[in-house]
Image (cartoon, rainbow, N blue to C red):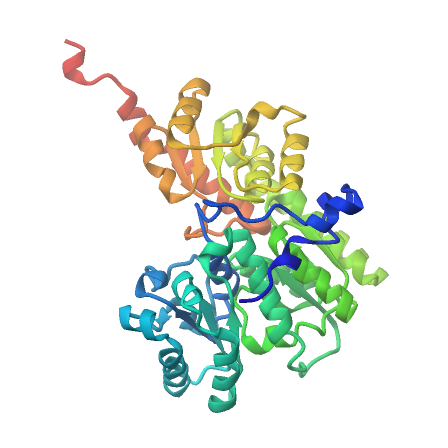
Length: 453
């Protein structure tokens, strides 16, 4: 098992900067019992790495850890279907007693022979870690035998939360993958996107903007990307950490080793998209590119605001409750406020300190709009108390909307609609209007004919 202590000590983290030297040595809070509730480290590692679409992702553990394997993420790829498939060693009781190393070696050989991937990622799970299977050693021997990179991802669920799993995945990429290939093309403005998973094809809404500016993506870690692209990620001008504090440690490590600067940004909403584009061109430092970007942004903003006018007329003043995780809790607040909607509250349960600060800035310091425990009972109370018109949340909250007879819009990672960039802003407005204007909500709130008698 890898030593995880260093993953809790992030020198570029604003939390650590405010600590005394003694407090810094302690690092961030360590995992506590129950920390894996709502997503374990294994789940977090898979979220970060599965979108490397042409590689085989092999789960070394019981079949249940593979979950509902086919298409279990909302990520999209134009490269391969491997990310949608479930590869597992399916260890049994006998393997628990005698060890699962031979079974893992056989599974790696079989997957390489049958699918010819450029690499195999092997994920440890709770059971295989507890019985002592030496993942690093097996992967090293397997790599020598099959002739393709075999990358160990030591992220058993019991070590902590989904966020920690993201960090472990980032470290595995930095240690075993990034810098192991040289790209064919080095001329031009190449950047990396870290923490962009191409949910519902959102990356594809951003690429056309980059193409107009002559900016190219070296690697998107990890959305619609290939193993060789990630391996060559060290040859980029800068890293943009897209809505993901979990991969800031990878960005910092790449800055130290490869001298690649980074910044954190978002592509949700008109303002944030424009700001991210300007940050990229400013860090590249080409004056001609900066002028070109300013002109493009002006055109895109004007075009988008014009397209949004009929939707804003309908949505203006509508009350919305948002129950999403992490950065979406503030970035989507910014989006709907640009549509003229009133946000009565947003989830802060899985948000970092920085996320909460951004929320408070948007809400002008009103802490009552930050929901620390968005359980169904609390959501129902808020919907009734504030007469909410629409609930934006993941699929599990859909039944809360049904019970309270309000419109619902899925904004989780399993969604099928993309909401990033200027085009995504229009998509969000269209879907919100469709949700709010659906006749069924008016009908279900009416008094039944037999109750009028």
